[in-house]
Length: 477
Image (cartoon, rainbow, N blue to C red):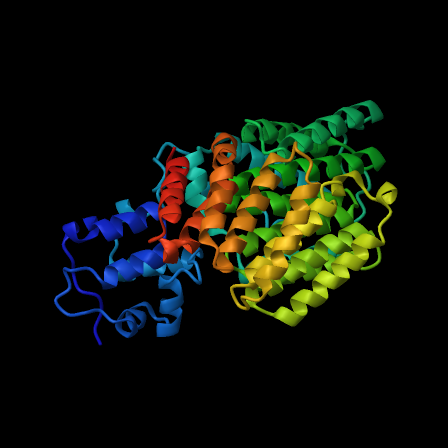
């Protein structure tokens, strides 16, 4: 059947293709490619699907926006097959680092390093030192190096092994209670700040705090305050990971989630390590790897089967449901959601750790509603079940949680798209765009782009065209 024809540079300037590039929509780009007037013979879906190595049904779902293409490996494969010029792509824009730059590849391997406390402190110190010297462009270049599959899951299984006794593994001064209290105040302040959407918080400021703490831990002797300081480091590492993920720096995010798990282990806080595994799973869901995410969640569940509080069990069950939603496993999804609701109802808020405060009733409802919307891609009937949960989340959200409220509104709008209500969906998104423009949150902007892709089949509706243009303006600002 051959392959795609060689095309002139002018081919890619056609208005339909230009719109797809602007919308960052590979599905629309494939459709525009097939219908381009340059082709002497019509390019059928069967023919293009064969070139891309997928089925005609898959291509049809991509083109009509039913299944967004957001996995990096697929985006790169399709671009390579069709010969799309590199300068036209909305991904892989960082390019290779300059010879005088520190490369993301120079950052120490955190998956293969030993899990004993001295090596954990050393890994954190070396990684933060490298990242403080790395440019954002070089960090973004490293996004392709995210570990997946057995490389990731088998490495993280090591957290289940007992921690080796520390003895007196360093001869430095003991971290005293006053120092520890100061560290805890810093971590709490940074945690609260990050939960409100960042508010301009510089990622490198948190990296600097983590680097200083790691240097201190590397020289500290074994003891209860040292272990508690490791836990503070785990919190800081998780904050850096989340900020990196928000910025689209997936490789850096994964490194710091791994370091957070390792530091929590060294701090003998397995429940927090499981919480970090749940965060790693969310990153896998974001990258279109639900199977990997599910395995990480199950690692967290198994490792805390005797120690998890009801709230932690509920959180892990919602992440389990997240995987089932992406995989279209309806019965397993509703089973996991039901168990999560039961666990959450059984909790005693006064007995829960402070780092689980963010997983309140609003968060539970928001996650359930958003995941039901994901499930609606496989079973459209789930969309009407999603909306009440998201409405409930919005009613319960604290006004200070601006980013979470933005996620809720965009999630409700995407649910209305599935329900065939594009005008109502656009009204919701138009209302949240000013907030999104102020937040400049990478994840919020990506959710808006998801909405834009999902409304492509309604692009003839005036409200949809206007909203898509407005989203494009906010994203490109």
